[in-house]
Image (cartoon, rainbow, N blue to C red; front, side, top):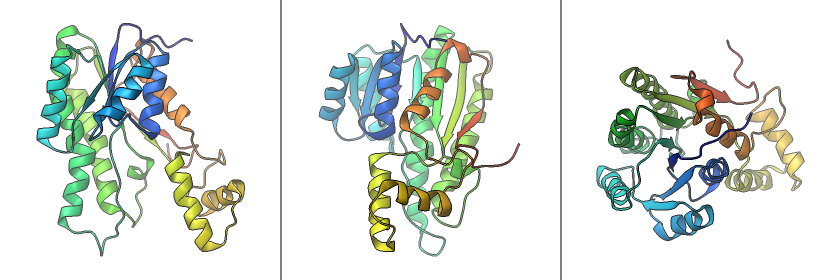
Amino acid sequence: MQVDLGGRTALVTGSERNTGRVIADTLAACGARVVVHSNHDLAAAQAIAAELGGAAVAGDIAGDEGCAVLCTQLREQSLHIDVLVNNYGTASAGRWDSTETPDWLDMYQKNVLSVARLARALTPAMRAKGWGRVVNLGTVGSHRPGPAMPHYYAAKGALATLGVSLTQELAGSGITVNTVSPGLIHTPDLEAAYRARAAKRGWGEDWQDILAHILEEDFPNPCGRLATREEVAELVAFLCSDHAGFINGQNIRVDGGAVAYV
């Protein structure tokens, strides 16, 4: 099966780095015209867009003003979005005894309202065309949150609920809405963070030894490894295609079977 996104224009938020960049690369390889987004660095987004033959926008979508700036840039470039991949989102450290009200509000702005703003701005045009795709990037932690980062997991849980509500709102429109919830993804940032932890805990410097500790202590799963960014991106690309036209309102885990429930 070949995923063909030819003729589609896809906005991928937070796509100047990490998993968002790989999603942008994958959608472009499937034929989409990709709009690369950065919250703060338009030049970085433009450089990637030049590589992909796409376009670039910038705007801090954690606030109303930044989202409006992004949408203005879309209009100025006559970019009509068919596919919205809400990849942007961020976590912050904290526990129940250390997170304060501003921390909770910050996570909600970045992980929930950033998505709501763009969905409200961009789905009306999709509805008018009778076709569209919205894919939100969640986390497996919303299925099994722990005591750490309660403000982050609460926001991501709200994001999953938002996706179901938006699915109902767009019923009969030709637009599908799905959430992709990865477990730990092997990114350069994640590896750097675990190498720093390994140095403190005496796990050694070999990545396979460090990985064994990760799988034992933080992310045990039947596949016995971490997800790659490409695996997440390929699922996103499939959900953006016509092949996935009857997959709607779902929260799909990419976790190697870590969450063991039906």
